[in-house]
Image (cartoon, rainbow, N blue to C red; front, side, top):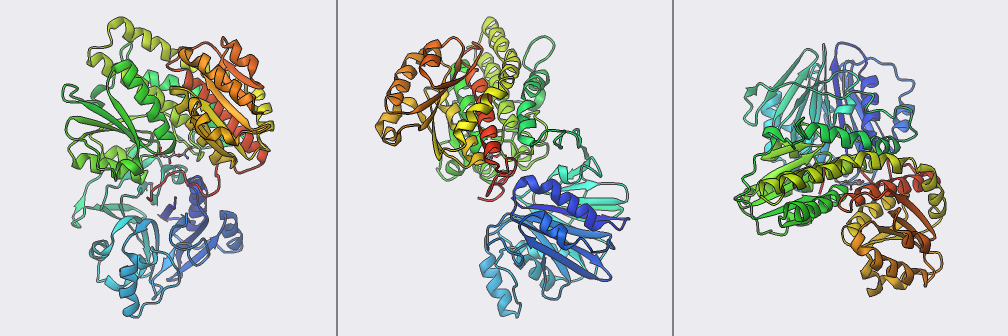
Length: 607
Ligand code: M6R
C-alpha cells in the first residue's frame, strides 16, 4: 500500500532523503511515486507513474536546495496509476502539498462542495480533497486547521503536509493508517514504516489514532485529538539496516526463508525460561475459566498460520477454536462476547480488515490478543494483550518467516493454555516442547535440499495451473503453499482437501497437470496414496512432499521432496518450507519480480 516519507532538517538534502526513503518503502507495493519540497519560497512537486527510477530520472539534473519535503509511493485505489493521480497533491493556491495513505470514504461529497466553492481538481483521487480543505480552512495555526479538516474526513488516513507559508514545518496526522515519527539530531522524519528512516535514526514515536504532530528540524510536538499538546515516549528500534537489507542474497524472500531456523530458535528463547517453562510474562493475562471459545482471525498467510494454530489448540489444549478471514469475520456478526478470546494474527500489525475485526470484537466485549511482528503497530496498540513474533523486519511481499514465527508462537500458546486448562500434564508438557525444539534443525535440513527443489521448479515454470492436495492439517498447509506459488509466480494454483477432488476438480486433470501432494500425517498416508493413484491414472504429474519413511508415497510419485520423520503435529510446518522454496525458485525461473509481485502490497491498509 502507499508509503509516506517526510524530512525536515538542517541540511539541504530533502530530495536525497526522500528518494532514499521511497526506495526503502518500495517493498510495500506501489505503482507511482512523487515528492514535494519547499525551495525559494515555493513548493516544487515532481511525480511519475511507474517505478521510482522514472522519478529519479526526471530529477537527475535537479540541484539539491531544500531542507524540507514529503514523498509518497502510491498504490492506486481511486483513479488509475498516472502522473496526475500520483501524490503529492497541491491546493489550488499552491500553498500546501499533501501526501495521503488510506481511503477518504466521503471524498465525493467533499469534492462536490469544493467545486461549488470554485475549487478545481487535477486528479481523480480521493486524497486531493485534503489539500483543498487544508487551504480552505487555514486560519492562523496548523493545529486548528488540521482539526477542522479531520472533522470533515471519513475513512482511514495517514497524512503529511508541507506549507509554503510555514516552510520550516511538516504537519502530520493519522487514523487507522500507519505513521511514525523518526526523531533525529537536528533532523526529524515522518514515515509509514521504520526502514524508511532507519539510516538516520532509531528513535521513533508511534503516533496513535487521531494524534497530530508538528515537526521542525529541532523539535517534534504531538497533540491529542483536542489539539492539546501531549508527551509521547520515544521508542528505540532494536533492529538495524543489516536486517532490513538483502545482505548478499539475490532476493529478500530467499534471505527470509533462510532465516527461519534462527527465528524459530529466537522465538523459543524469547518465550521459554531456563527452567524449560513457557513464559509470556505479563503479556498474557487470560482468565481461562471465563473463556468458552477461541476465534483466530487474520488475512492471507497469517490466516493460514491461524489454521495451524487452531489445530494446536484443539489437539493440545483441547479448546474449541474457529478460524476466520478478517474481511469476512468483521461483517458476519459473530456470536462472541466476554467469554470469547479472539486472537488476531498480523505480521504488519496494520492490516485494516484485521484491525477493524478487532475493534468490532472489542465492542462485543470479547478479550483480544494480537500476535504481530511490528512493535507499536495499530493492531498491537488496539489489542488487550500482545505477543510479538520475533521474526525481525519482513521485507519481501510474500510472507515466509513471519508465518513460521507465528506458527511456533501459536504452538507454545497451545501448550501454555493446555496446561492452564488442566489437560497437559507435566510429562506431555515437556514432550510437546521437545517436538518444537526439533523444528529449527528440521528446517535447516530441508533448506539443504534447495538444489533438488530448484530442479522441480524448472518443470513447474511452464505450467499454467497446479493443484495442491493434502488431508487433515496437511490440506491447510496446501492453502499456504498454493497462495505462495500464485502470488509470486503468477501460476494459477488451487488447494484442496485430497478427498474433495473427485467431487468436481478432477475433471481438470489431464496429461502433465502438476499436483503437489503433501503427505505428512501417519493416519492419512493410505488415503493419500489412493488419491495420488486416482490422479496418476488420469495423467497427473505428482510431486510429493512427505516424510522419508512413507516410501509407498515416494515410489508412486513422479518427483518428491522428503524430510525427516518429525512428529505429525509440526510436520506441515517443515513441509511448508519446501513449498516456500518451490514457489521462490519457480518465480525466479520465470523471471518475475519475486520481492515485489505485481498488484500486491506488503501492508494492506485499505479494505
Ligand atoms: O501483515 P499481515 O500479516 O496482516 O498481512 C496479511 C496478508 O496480507 C499477508 O499475509 C499476505 O497474504 C502475504 N502477501 C502472503 O504472502
